[in-house]
Image (cartoon, rainbow, N blue to C red; front, top):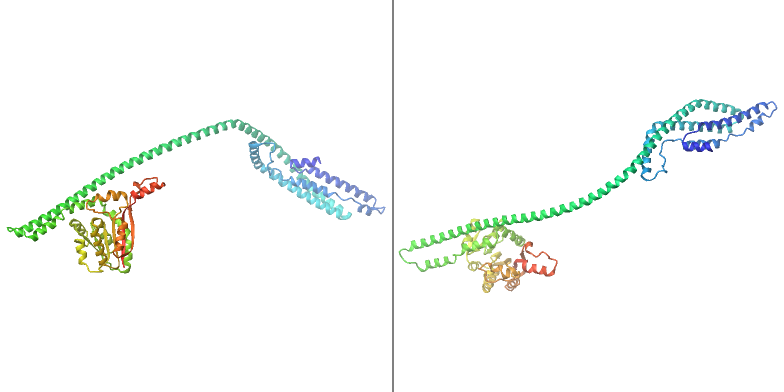
Length: 516
């Protein structure tokens, strides 16, 4: 039992113990065989041979199984249960290193163990066969066994001696590794306080880093705020510069228009004088001079438009909202006849021309007429009432009036709507655009910026007039709200929403109707 424990603990195959058991069994068999030989003459040899006791192979196989379970010496690391925590992990790590380093020695040991166990199992098989065979073949089997044992005995003894030497070397190396592990553990115990100090220092650095990061973010925000303010100042200066340049260009343009108009008037006056001199002017010529007086402020109004109306690009961009309505009309008939009353600078005519429509403009301002003609636009200088009276019934598909009705008295407005309804074709469309008086800033102030404005016409009023004079499917579009930068920021409050709607809501509206 003690020998079994020793074999199990060390992981070595105890060959001597196994051989001793085999010799003991063989001695018993030889003794029994001798007794059978000397009693052979008495006629009892056969009985003696049959009474030969069997070899206890079960015990032998138990010993072989125990040896086989421990044959893989040096293949795995022990659990290192006597170590704890990080020490145990370090011991296991170095144990794995030791196992790997000694694998070149233990591989031979395991090969030898497996060879011996295989041989012993072969012997056990043989012994079992001996038990089953008769006494005549027992001697032959015994001899075979002893021959097999003698054949392997020298090799086993040699290997055992080599293994003992290797084990001594391994013990020496293991003692050295154990000392190294103990030294590492001691060093680890010395390092632990330093690690704690480093961790404390790291925490301090992290806190300091967080403070520095917050300070940096604060500086960055201040820089961005200052940079934003600086950029706003630059933008303001650039805007002021551009506005100044625009003002100068408008002034130059206005002066050129005024000079051209004055030259035209002077030429007309001189021409009429040349025809009549030395006679006095007649009534027709005096009427020509009187009619020309109506256009004395044409150039000034053009300058006013350039300052307060907005650029051509801005106006054309706003007018894009009406193109879908034009598409509906042109879908019925590609040859659409269009008249724009009060065409002004011709932005709407220019946009229609770009989209492939053929339209004519109508205006009384000679300077604006000249500007439109310079852009190759089809325009006519005439009073709108005079021109509409020349048109037959159902002559036009579309008639537009941008910012015209606010220049008319009420009776003239009714007359204009009536004439428009008359000249429109069935299914034709009329479009009126005007300042939105519902916007308090427009109705109380901005509307009166133009001195030629007479009365604001609220959108509901204009819708009623057009419907009452024969138009149908009339709809109102609220347009051009103030930019968001003008509005009060806290828009979640209901009173603020209402304030923004009344003061910074749509600045213009459009009324669109159709003739039955």
